[in-house]
Every structure is written in structure tokens, then in C-alpha cells.
Image (cartoon, rainbow, N blue to C red):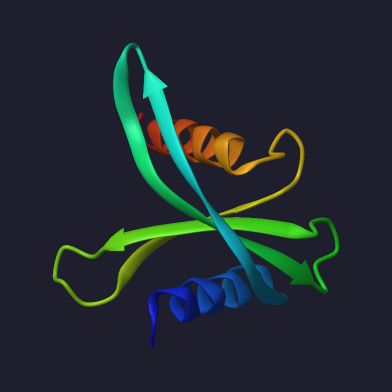
Length: 98
């Protein structure tokens, strides 16, 4: 399965709707003068989701080298772009670690 197929599959599984790849956007998130995250956010249009019409997704290889650790963020306010999707995901991960 390709990277895009894995992202699409994760969206379908997590959010229960059809996902169609529409593009990607490079994002660099800076926090306190340091790069907090940098990479390409893949953008999907959604069909069949009750609240969101778009989803942002990205991943990094799992520690065991098999598959991907995938993050998905629905475009529901305050998320309105790939940049804000990354910010929200970083904040959620930091909160979960506390």
C-alpha cells in the first residue's frame, strides 16, 4: 500500500467517510524560534462526513519500520488550513502528554 493509500485508508477508518486526495501543502510550524514540525500535509476532500468537507493528514514511519504513524485532522473550526491542522495536532499531543 502506498503512503497516500495508507492516509486515505486511515481517514476512512477513523472518520467513516470516503476520502479523495486533492493535493499537499508544505508546512513549517515554528514555536519559540525552533522548528516544532516540518513536512507535507496531504489534503483530502471528504464525502459522507456529517460535519467536515475536508481532512488534513500526514504520517511518519513507525519505529519498527513497518507502516506509518498517521495523524488526521478534520477541517472543523478552528481548523481552516493545513497550517492550523498542524498547530491543533501539536497542541493536542502536548496536552495528551501532560
